Image (cartoon, rainbow, N blue to C red):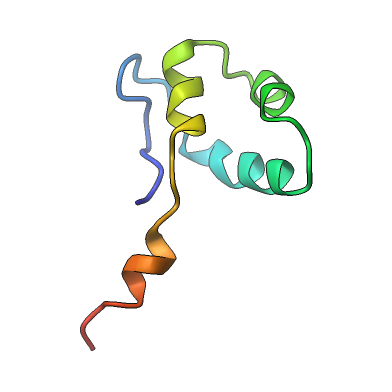
Length: 65
């Protein structure tokens, strides 16, 4: 739902990079180039970004008041 603070495998802090990654990919930039520019070289960190599905807006609709 929310991007993890650190990579699950190596422990590198990655949460601060998510918004920039999401915005740049939404603007049409290839994910590979964005990940390289952000400094995510390890496969575990790259998979974390590529496989993440942002569901926070969907879950928020069902929140109890």
